[in-house]
Image 1 (cartoon, helix red, strand yellow):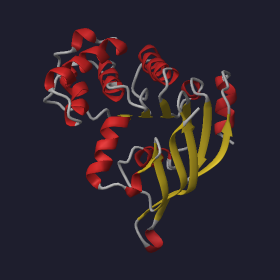
Image 2 (cartoon, one colour):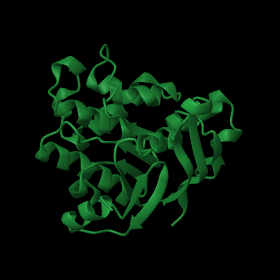
Image 3 (cartoon, one colour):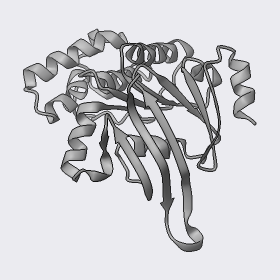
Length: 240
């Protein structure tokens, strides 16, 4: 399988001197096409920092981020933004839906920004909503949607246009079990169709959907395991 995401010796330091916070300390990770990798660890271990760097939303202090053979550090800001829109889907922990846009418009927005015409982008947006089980909510605004429907809308936005890399930051954190399973099933299906996925989660039962689980502590990858369907075993491993 070809590598979609390659992180090499990443460090991220916030601040200077004695107040400096080392969010990541020389972390390396490769995620291949068709693979879903779960990232676990205690609060403050660097999980969300890993995702923001992987998605090009922040720049590392040192090290490299490469998506489909293109190193982000070598791109202009405009070129990096274009690559994110084209290749990266991001499910944010707080969803980041635009209140003034309908569900179909929120989902279609990345395609419009990447140059698709309004009709084409809307057709892609409408096509993604059935995949997350809310086709009837296409013309609803975020404030008109339930707490279980908003994350599905955010998930549809992350997959529209067949993104090659899907990053999800605790996408099931505020969901009931059934809705959370739907979001994870969608992420798993997208990876099975050839995308690469990274899922940050605190839940061992959610990490059990992944092909690999990487455990972070203090900005370092301290352990890694293959797929373990036994959620209880994953939980014990994450506490080591």
